[in-house]
Image 1 (cartoon, rainbow, N blue to C red):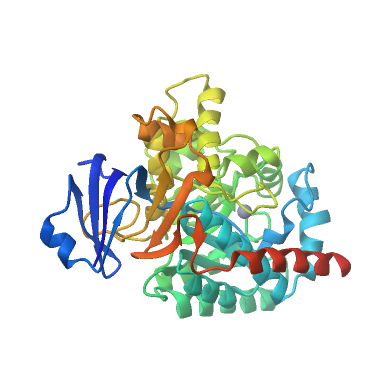
Image 2 (cartoon, helix red, strand yellow):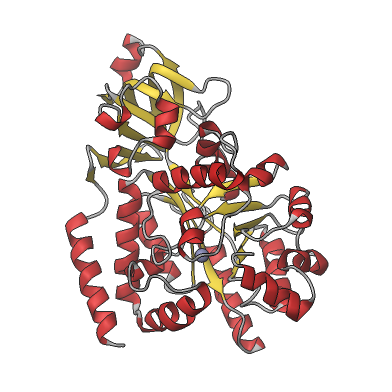
Amino acid sequence: MLLLKDAAIVTMDKENPFIDNGFLVIADGKLIEVGSGSPSEKQEADAAEVISVKGKWLMPGLINTHGHIGMTLLRGHSDDLPLHRWLEEKMWPFEGKQDEEAVHAGRALALAEMVKSGTTTFLEMYHLYMDQCAEAVEEAGMRATLMRSMIGLCSKEEQEAKLGEAVRFAKQWHERADGRIRTMLAPHAPYTCPPAFIERIVEEAVQLQLPVHMHLAETKKEVADHLEQYGCHPLDHLDQLGVLDAVPWLFAHGVHLAEAQLERLARTEATISYNPKSNLKLGSGIAPVKEMLERGIRVSFGTDSVAANNTLDLFEELRIGNLLQKGSYQDATALSAGTTLELATINGAEALQFPELGKLKAGYQADFILLDGEQLHVQPAAHVLSHLVYAVKAADVTDVFVQGKALMRNRSLLTLDEEKIRYQANRQYKKVCSLM
Ligand SMILES: [Zn+2]
């Protein structure tokens, strides 16, 4: 049993949202008690380890619901190009030269960056070396939803081979690593997957009882091209195919959705992964999150890859995401601090289908982070919830726990070797560049 005491706790539990001075009791990876005041003498005596976290703030680990960490070596490789040219001229050629070692070096860098900035759970959608990715997640002690991404611009035989690989991966890794890994199926996007292929993927997902993840309505061009080719919006197209209610969808972006699509989405189980920085950097636009939430559509946060962001810092993502909604609607009430935190915790857990995650509550997973509440930029320290959205920085994260196990203590990574990761990332980047 592990005991943390003397903490200011943001629980994200509506019944008891903030504990000024409280404690956590943890056993077998779960929270046994989230209490106010001091633990009892018996609780202290029973604990194998008692940690006082005075001056720190404790909250659920952040959840990133869209990304491609297999592309982490592409950070800064190409900026300032529109999405389609950026993909075709810069991203895909580099990715074509990445071998297993290069992808692994990028992923290790991403895992370390995520832990250091307070992300405990993330989604990885990628087409290369996914087994190795799952092994890396297991070793690092993080929590993740993983999927082998599929592009269907190829023959039927190749499509089936990709789907076979994706299904094999999904079956093999679902609920592995003490339940920390879950899987989904993932057609890349409506503009890279013909309708018949999307139908096939959904058919398999129904069989496996897994959700489906896909990029959707990211750019104006994507929607215009779809209208020209098929005569309808990509979301309406999924509806016409009869696949929209067949599985719980997780759509990345959802920038270009009009009233009709928002209304239809509100009647589904779908989640929109809001990726504000990627959408800004690629000039894609601003997702209508305020209207989504008003209609009861579930929204979570994602960073996308660092090629489009260029960091995996969710605290920065949620601050920018919040401010963008206020600015674009010219409405300071468009998105509150509390709702913003819900998107990055509770909604993220629901989107990635992790039960008992996203809140600090008895019976829930012991996935939480600690932040330094004594930094000057978070004084006066009286408004913790506000500061978590509008003032903190990723570097304020001091400690990270997943399933009750420490992945970082006092800013030192415990399951990942920071120095080796930095060296390998630079070495592998130069190697891939030399092959181009
Ligand atoms: Zn993406």
